[in-house]
Image (cartoon, rainbow, N blue to C red; front, side, top):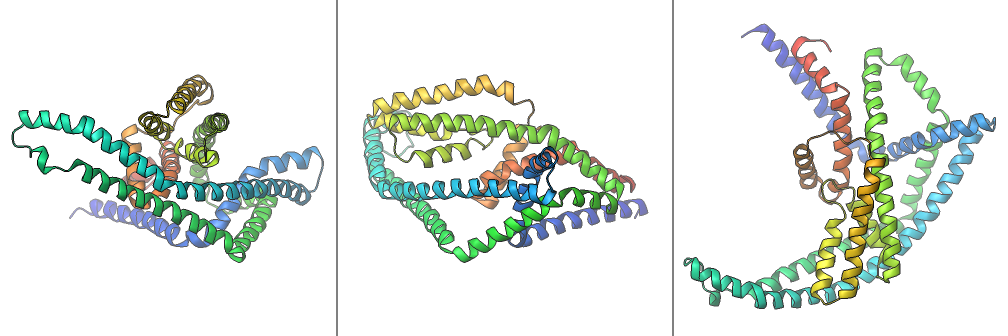
Length: 371
């Protein structure tokens, strides 16, 4: 066998082993290091503000960090407390109202089945002779089974969320410990972030630093810009939704708004996944006033997004839509519901790595033995 092929194959195995090793380390250590990851993100967010306050007011770095962190976490904790309290109240109300809602959907679908589906199926049986006759098909039974299954699954899902949230909130010692570690780590990282950067520059190989700089350069110029734009657009849409739903006197406004906010981040889905089924349901349950209001709100949001999107969104993820959909599907299949929110972040990281030339660098290493 050719020696060159063996050497290339060994390089390929070494790169694969390193990538798999990083994945396994990240997977099995995440539960232990996630407070420090959160702390690092907080430090990166607060660092520019701390630096500005430090030089503008001529304060000691430690004092500037302490002032900014106290203000930030006081505001953050207050907002989170009231949001969680309101969400628990709305979740409880929603779980209690679910049986009635599914009963209405069952009646609605039964009426539609009798009025539209059965006559259409009878016409088809005359044309397509091998289809079973309508006497052998109990449409109502299938509809009832489907709705009952959907209702029980939805109730179980929501109850689990509420119970999990309540359990976490009731475990004050655990939550308090995590918060203390995040606070301490955030303070230390923010205070010494510039020193940490200098230490890394002095002790990490220059070539590795250059590759990291390329990644962060792309993240800063393109991906972070994209994220910032998406957050601005989604926040504007969510504020409009919340204000409008308050005016329409809709129940569970906060839960609907937060759901809309998160769903709006899912690639190629958007708020239509919430509004279109909701509008259809209200129309068929003869809630025409709310149907018109929600339709106007949905159309208004689409128009506003079309106006502000080109002005705010100057860049994109940079991946082909098919690739993005494949990765999104894999994320949902492997991680479940949380994959919906993690996968867009994974897409952004993959895009940054690709545009920074890391993939080409690895391929050149495998092929030629140099980057």
